[in-house]
Image (tube, rainbow over all chains, first blue to last red; front, side):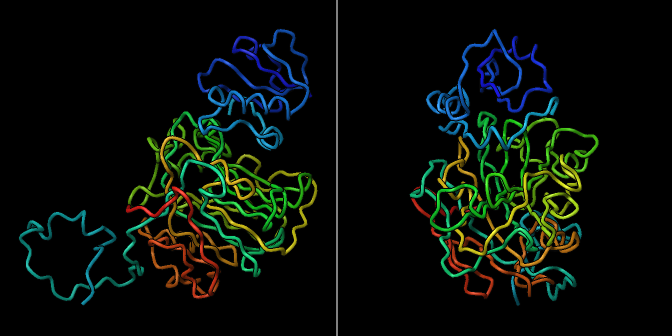
Length: 84
Length: 314
């Protein structure tokens, strides 16, 4: 699995079937995405679920409105489903 | 003679005239009867969960006497009323009801939870005994088709997501009754774990009749800690913006039928659950009328309300 921050333009080009988890930022211009696809034009790449979640904690105001970030278990439990 | 609170299921406060006579000009109304009307009570308070996280802000029970020890093959029903305080910037999940093994910070230890993910507009039910032994299903409310149509109709949220500014179909005081009714089958599929919005069944949910999961949950009867309005392992995930209110939590040791859930909803007016037709299966009952005490008659432990979480008038 690969762990990325990407913008809307890149997200729109991704193979949605390969996406496991995706969270649009509060401002709706960035995405946390985990995917089996290799994404060259990413903003940031992380080595593990813990690492990308730690980034969301440090930058929680971008990603969540509750003062927290994304938990590693959420990456596993809340599956991306295209269109819903 | 007791005071009249409802007439033909309409709250007296909302009745402005009677047989053409303005309410304020009415004299005494003698001998009004309402056969079949469910017993209600003066429900003046709810408990509000602080949006600040941590044990010191929680609404919780730390049980040490086996009062809540449902497992993977238990039949049970968990029902509560909720008035959302979060807004559309939450962009995360909020845990509404959660239980895990007492004294642990392990989120997979005998976990049962009902949570809502705001950015996806999904209401989840899940239980697990380990990170790789879990069952779940979810219902979403903004798609009027297929497996989602029933939830779309029941919630009445339309195309917008659930929040303080879009509460959808509500009962008295803008509260919604959320209920999960699980059978003895070790599955969160809708054939076995039925979710209701007010008294209305939400249908199959995304994962359908058999649900989804990983492995085979095998929960123990270890004592549990229970949290309202947060998770029960870090006491986080409590929403944003304004406090969410919770009221009238009932826990039953059977899977309530659709008609029994409808009876509990009582057309939107919270009833005295001890008068419910299935009251012999009422396992725990919390009215949150200025205290966290159990009203089931079974001497269950009380909720402890800490920090800025508090009782509020409704």
